[in-house]
Image (cartoon, rainbow, N blue to C red; front, side, top):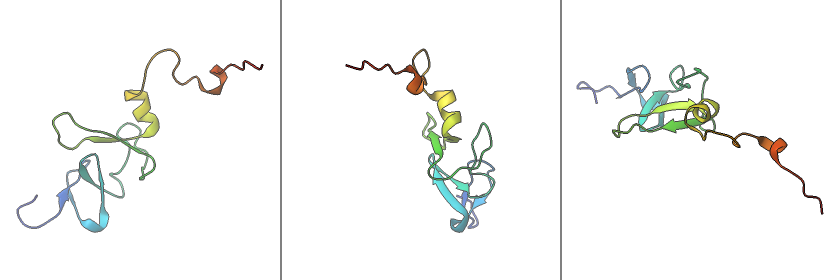
Amino acid sequence: MPQWGGGKNCGRCGKSVYSNEEIIAAGGSWHKRGCFTCKDCNKSLDSNTVAEKKSEDGGIGEIYCKSCYGRSYGPKGYGYGGGAGALTNTGK
């Protein structure tokens, strides 16, 4: 916390975040406009589209959109993401 009042520091820009402009995610505070965006593609996020990557040291993590998070940290290898085309119909 700053010495002279102020708010918490934003996880993206480092400036003070006051309660009327604050969104809490990934263990930190973020500005609603401009800073609450995906780290990779910079897409604006909301509570339904955010995916959090916590930091290993317990500090403020990073926020991603669900598609960038899945691309970077989701399951890898054959068989993932096949969708309905990979299903077979046994049709008895």
